Amino acid sequence: MTTKQIRLTKPQLEFVNAVDQFPCVIAGFGAGKTQAAVVRALVKKLKYPGQNVAYYLPTYDLVRNIGFPRFMEVLEQFGVEGKLNRSNAVIDIEGAGSIIFRTMDTPERIVGYEVADSLVDELDTLKTEQARAVWNKIISRNRQKKPDGSLNTVAVATTPEGFRFVYERWKKSPAPGYRIIKATTYSNSRNLPAGYIDSLKASYPSALLAAYLDGEFVNLTAGSVYPGYDRGLNASTETIRPGEALHVGLDFNVTKMAAVIHVLRDGEPHAVMEYTDVFDTPAMIALIKSQHPGHPIMVYPDASGGSRKANNASVTDLSLLRSAGFTVCVNSQNPAVKDRILSVNALIHKDEQRRYRVNVDTCPHLVESLEKQAYDKYGEPDKAGGLDHVIDAAGYFIAYKFPLVKRTANKIELRAF
Image (tube, rainbow, N blue to C red):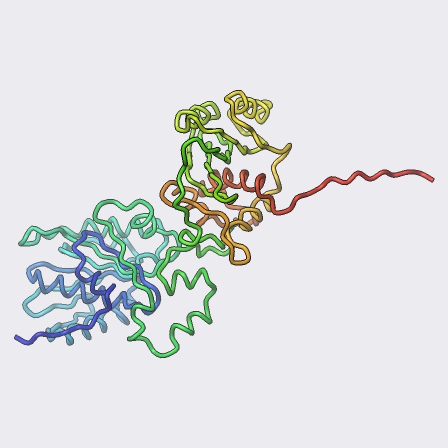
């Protein structure tokens, strides 16, 4: 028996050998994700010759132009005979069953076959709802029982395309068995042509480079509201210390009140706790008092109010905050939305300084809003996605405590001569 060797990068090998039920390699351009997916598919196929493997690509053109030739090339490297049936989109492997190819452009056609393992290439290029439908269909096909009783697996290899299905399923709220393996373009540099990475750097802005070179989830929507925010560079490990003053940004919304608690370190703000989807002002007051006894509470609320009360909402809600013993820091009216955003962005990243820090573990919704909120077609921060409440809360605190522009009132007398 001849031993064949396939050279893989460290992330590729980690993905090929992953025993998780749903591993996902998030890769930059040229990082070798498809090579890793093909090798994993063939390793699974040869390990379980009595079961089949499915390989999914977004369109049939990609199956024909990338899937078929890549598999035949790697089979040759493995020293294994494979027979390609283009009309049925199947590669039959001598003595080891079949690789079944399917596309993801029509989820309703993912029917009529069963496999033990699957590989999904470029899942994140699909729109979120389509990717979700495809994923559910693919999982339903994975039901051939393996002789050793091991799990049926569905592995994903994709370039990150913003905050779509892959982000939601693998990064934001991963269930057991969902694992991310990161592969940067640099990890595969030995297999890339000279100048390839430099050409990417010259062609793409920084946000796209983070996705397409480093394999990071970033906001790819044109007009990100907070383009300078980076969850790593703006990260804080600070937590609340006993008895210290807490600075609470507060946004009033019916059943969706939001608060972000900040502490000051060397005069700079750190977001260290958040509360979202709280019912109303009394409920928020009760929550803050129960969770933070013994702390002086400074509240920086939405000046316009917005509680369930129909009349005089701001006065009523602000009175409730004061009656609770909180110090209320608020101007007679909110700053212009543009000024509030500028104030936040100035603290996030200006002149190579990152003054605003966020604890990623304790403020996940704030992190998501800073990363994902974009401008709508009218040039206003998008509110349709529900990302506005918690970042508005933080913004009221920042705009009051760290205003970008301090305005002064001038009195002008006009006299007749």
